[in-house]
Image 1 (cartoon, rainbow, N blue to C red):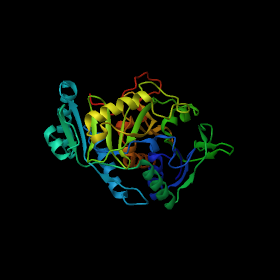
Image 2: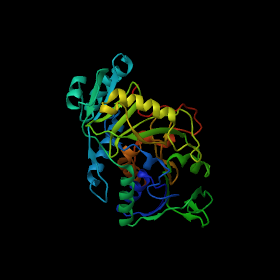
Image 3: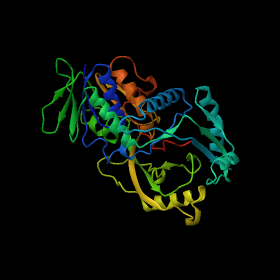
Image 4: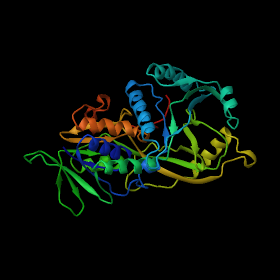
Amino acid sequence: MNVGIVGGGAVGVTAARDLAVRGADVTLFEKGTIPNEGESTFRAAGVLYDAFAAPEDARVGARAIERFHEFSGTAGFEFVETPYVWFARTGDEKRSASIREQVPRMRKHGRDVAFIHASELEDRYPALNADDIGVAAIARNTGRTDPGSYARMMAAEAEKNGVEIRTETEVRVRLDETATDGAPRILPDGGHAEPFDAMLVAAGAHTKRVLADAGIPVALKPYRVQALTCEFDADTPMLYDATEGYYLRPHPDGLLAGDGTEEVESDPTEWKHAGDSAFQTTMEERLAHRLDFGSEGSPAVERAWAGLCTATPDHDPLLGEIRPNCYVAAGWQGHGFMRSPALGEAVAEDILGDGGIPEFDPRRFTGDEEFEIVEGMAVE
């Protein structure tokens, strides 16, 4: 089978490698480099966990962590084991109830999670202020990494297995319904249309535009999120404050923290790449409240930036065949990179006829749905 892939992010390169390992002839087109510093994989947080309550999400999360472990130590990619803690503040009854309901469901699906008391958190992590934590849970089959290192490693693994990777190559896609073979076609700028037995569009925030050019509507909206890094030298787990809606994790610069979800659709070709001053000020206040920065009293921010995520009407991905021989992989709602080893594997299996993930079938939508953008990590 001859497969063309549009997009060299984490899911695209994983699918390319897995297809090639199973005997497919694969060509991957990426409009920039791998990783592309302007796109989602490079700008992802690198938080990795499998703490999901829905059965399909738990399965995908577990497989992703398993594969991150499998590839750790390959070509500069490292999975750094780090506990993940999420919590609701005292008085936040809605999210406290949600966490109390989530944990038993996660455990039912085999996830290594448990409730943890605020006092135990402070004992384990002396720099952490847990005075206002009402309900908290901890996941242990979790970790963190540099997302760019995963993309580089997987691209190298793909090429090792025979994938042709064409970087700095803008393309358009077509479904030639008049052709006798019915094959999808990819048109590199300045080149000739190339037919493939199957085509996967995994172009992140550009997926909607790429498919629209071929007359295929998708229920997908790009939206902007923000993060920053700052100095910090004390031990801390990865944290998610469900009440305030922000996260933080250890990072080579000290800490990486993020939030800043804009609940409006962004133009994937024209958006602000730098972090906003209001976001930075708010995050500095949150971090100063949650952690002990010693004599400094507040974080010294190294840099702040933005990235694009993609939303769908039901907050689940679009993963699978959307037209005959045309597949899509997008709509991660902020959980794309952390699940990319499993999502890329699943869509590769789908292309090869072994079935994908039915719950994520993109044909459940017509593509013209009206829907609101919501934060992907929100605990409701």
